[in-house]
Amino acid sequence: MHWTFGPFQENTWVVRSADGRGVVVDPGMSSRAEQERFERDLEAAGVTLEACYLTHAHLDHVAGAAFIAERFGCVPQVAEADVPTYQQAPLAGRVYGFEIAELPDPQLRPWSGRDAITWCGEPIEVRFAPGHAPGHVVFVSHAEGWVIAGDVLFRESVGRTDLPGGDAAALAASIERELFDLPDGCAVHCGHGPSTTIGHEKAHNPFVNAARTGMMQR
Ligand SMILES: [Zn+2]
Image: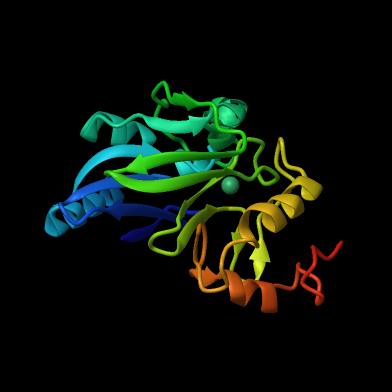
């Protein structure tokens, strides 16, 4: 399930198990109306949230973190390397004129390579993919053939690298190393915009060179 929330049009994802448990990724609901829509949709689908994960802690991806912690008792789990991003989020919000509720203390995870975790009993691989944010991770379900890619890779675009902690070379390396070794048919669920596939991006992403061996320098 997914929703598009807030002025930044951020995609919030819920991955659910067959028995009605769910994990929310990047909760971006930023108004009471969006919170209510999220709650209503979960209730209609019969989903009980049991965990909250962040691909990274930019303000549009954590705008609903306080709500999720209060309403569902799930504090955000975030890579240790993204703690500075998490701490800057409320200030970044004020810079953008986008007030977010005080963030809950996160659960820090020592992700720095590839790590095996479970969501509702199902295996998920966490892959460390910095560049857009210093502690950005992506979540892969090899069994179901998808990756929740946050702001690393978009349909025919890539994440920006001009924000604090951004690094264009690191982003290119992350895409090549952690995303482009997934199967062509693997679905890519993005932090903004429509979903895509690894194969489509290898063939059509203008930031990837035609030889498909690396990133075009721009
Ligand atoms: Zn971001």
